Amino acid sequence: MGDKMEYVALTGMSERVISELKHHRLLTIEIRSPHNFLAALNLSVGDLLLLTHTSHDDVSSGSSGIVAKLVKHQVSTHRTMQTTEHYSEERESISLRIQLDPRCVARISKVVNNKIGEATVVVADEVPLYNAH
Image 1 (cartoon, rainbow, N blue to C red):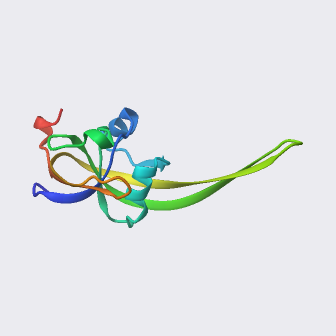
Image 2: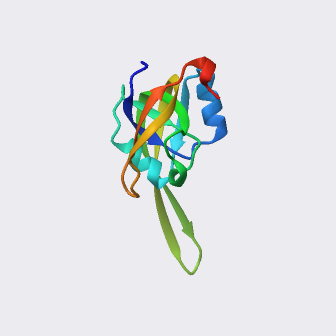
């Protein structure tokens, strides 16, 4: 790698997810946050994306993350019913399960798009292991 590349970024990821990916483990995660859901929804198997623990509001040049390859992509719908003698309520939620194969640590050099309701897109470059923090 080494070149600057543009990635869709998933932001506010847990430290556990970042740590698992740093240890080069294939990892499946479920995405429910609306912002990350919208960002990941249109990705295809084989795409590279960047995951960072930095929150959506704080993503900026210098933020670091993990570049991973999308291995699996599955949208699921969950329905729950709650009924009492006075009312009945049905809720539906959609989640996205993605399996990731980590590639490298990267540092964001430019935020291309970070608008609410749209995918966060960043330019980032690979960080040599001796520089990764």
